[in-house]
Image (cartoon, rainbow, N blue to C red; front, side, top):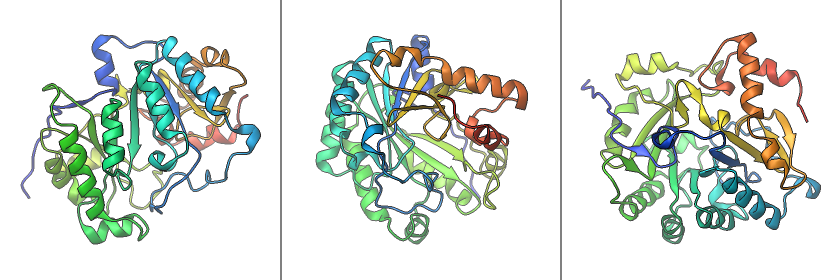
Length: 315
């Protein structure tokens, strides 16, 4: 096997290492989980228990959402992100929030499968300064089809990525607004180098482990490196701590969550003044947990994370 050493020549705009250039602020990320909508059935979906629709009482109005984005920008947040629930590109209010974030000087920072990244959407995202993190776990048509529950179409996704690649071309030598996030397990570790090559010089590339370390296909970061000789730094990480969590506020409905991938509630939004009150709460919750259970780069990947969930939620 021919191996390659991956040098992260491109940093994703809005990633923690990018924001660190100018010094990190107490609040950097406003992270919003759109109500769950997705046309795929990924075998590693982490939202199997989060698909029930929000009640009307739990749903923020369009005006409230706009005000929350504006208030977060006023408080210093530089990034509006959506990463934890479903496919945001097809969610109600997606265009509204991206546009509002951009108009308020924030970087829209969106995780997507790219299945719905058509020409119109690509133009809209480019015009609004969006960074795209595309979930791509295989370049093999049949394997991709299986990974996405028989509903994924690799051909469409590759066409959409190519279109975005052309639309997003240019910029600086160091920065990119496109990234590929590959979740590596035993089934696809043989493709890590192929996908790194696919990203080339213009797309940032990051590998991640499965969230569930009890999954029979789980490989640790060290396992992945041993097999591929490629080691990447997760997009949200600086100094071995997740800045999405440390310097972010995650909203789902009216609930404030520890992070986009956790169901632990640590607060609520009743009015706009509540946004400022949430700064630092997730960080404190997790740091207290780490004192007792030991540190981890990613809270939801911590082996004792389920114990924190069992303790209940904190309003």
